[in-house]
Image 1 (cartoon, protein in one colour):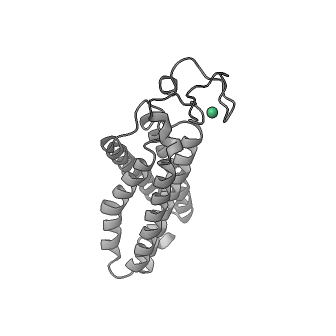
Image 2 (cartoon, protein in one colour):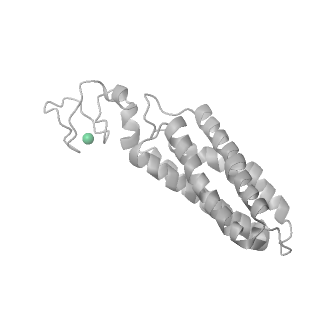
Image 3 (spheres, rainbow, N blue to C red):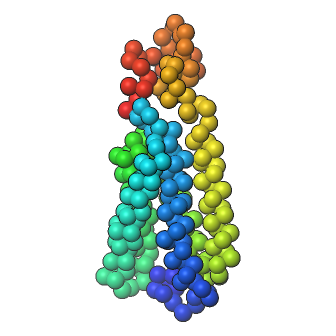
Length: 209
Ligand SMILES: [Zn+2]
């Protein structure tokens, strides 16, 4: 860990190029794919568009450079001692959790379990990139490729769960339960038969924000 942040002498060949490609190319793309996977989970009347997802990925990337990376580097520079390395790692992860939470809650308009899932999955995504960077610096680019493949599979799984019919259903024009998105067409009881939530009089889409 200390060789990673202190720029030690044990770098693998081509390590700088690999990390540069990771940060400038692969990570923004992964952020975009990640945000896109949550497009039907938003608490707004229409799903997130490609442009909105790209914007959110950009905001998250900027927060990452300024808040996460900048803050951690500052801590190491100010501290100049080994325990500050640990503190800077702790800081990096806390600021990442805060950054994902802020972007998810404020900008993507995610709530409840979806917001929690977003924060956990986003932080895991960062952890995977940390592993990729450390492997790239110490073991070689082949390991980075393996890690990037794992990240791609992770995002693909998120896409699969994020675009199931049950998730998309809220955006169709029939009435659906605002909690579980169960189709309430012809419902007379006033209670969702799937999860027991009382049905409000306003349309589900209008009450969900
Ligand atoms: Zn329900």
